[in-house]
Length: 536
Image (tube, rainbow, N blue to C red; front, top):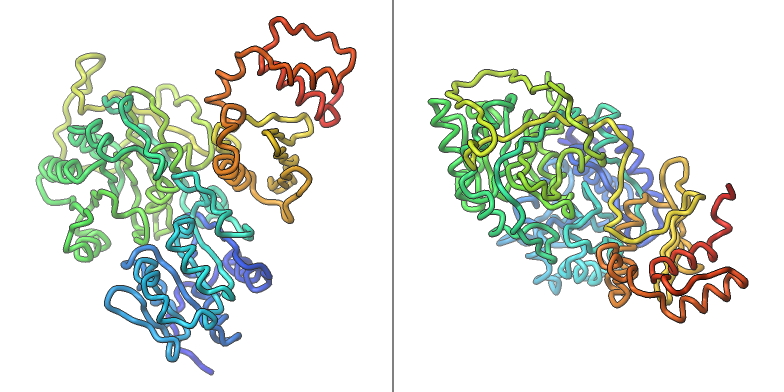
């Protein structure tokens, strides 16, 4: 059959590789991680086409927001597609592909035969640990599930292992940059005079309190506008800390430019599509938004992303979505400039270095970012010390985010590193062990004597273990959480610890008078796992 189809660009080799892996997958639910800009929508819609045309399968695509439901359908003009979202209803009798918002479908499941869905695709799958998703997946027990996300890390530290059995494919932002599928990052940190000391982290989101952030950065709009003027190149997206700050930033930028080059987009903006079209046509240069442009928007001509809304280091997924707006390839675009606004308190927040997985190297001495475009400005002098108003730039530095090896987030779990390259963590009733990394960096996980079937990326394992510890071993947090353990470690060793050391190492000369719990624990782990340590 000859189909005239809008498939989008040809598949890239890694996209075809992912599809081939999906075709061969025999489990129930698998996760695929593709960094923002690497084309997950193009990938999964091609797999849906294969499922429908080759296997005669019925497919369900789940999105967490109604405005994202339409997006994948543009690649599947040849397939009978239906929408289950808002006032739209799909029908299994006539639709082989159903694109649904989770919020709508979860309340309409009784309209569907639970055994007529063969394949479920979850877009932005880092949301999939939510109860609404689990209810839908459980309703369709025979469907095979594939989740797609740019990051497997959730802000609330709830691992995706509760939804997905296997991680079968992963290409990170760093991989995309190194292989020429995303543009390189040019990072600048601009220090504004604001203090994050009183800002709380909300456990449910894993990110800063929005109201606390708004208070901490209130009045910084002029500083953000100055940073834009001095360091932004070309089409620019600015992520603001509140609706008020977003509007103030737009007002100041336009005043300084002497014309309307910036527009504001918030959740209540009614002319969003008109503003986005004006941006794509370069009728305006700047989009300033609050909590809108993090997902589901393709603006590849963006050359600068300015983060004026600090993101907690525990919520790197949201930060990755922000920066990802500027990483897509575009004619004559050679890089994306990422500008992070950091505060004087050096509170741990996500930066471009966090995203790539690097430590932040020292700034290049004497190097000052050069402005490559010219905007009508009337810039004030840069002052120093106490003369700096609270809204002005205090310091800037360039950051080479491609300089050091990839890092991981251990969630401050008190792993013991073995000389073999592996790691171990004993808690009451359980011993977690991670193997030494394989040549590709992946590792195996043991829970007591049970080993994972497949090797997986270290970050995936760290996320899983942290979630497992939080759920199953919360009472032992003083043992596995570094932040709690530092107090526990200082206490006097317990009789049971002393007895165990004597059993493990008879005749060992042990001075129990000043022995702490931390010292005893280290000795116990040494004697148990001595075989894994090299003899000097």
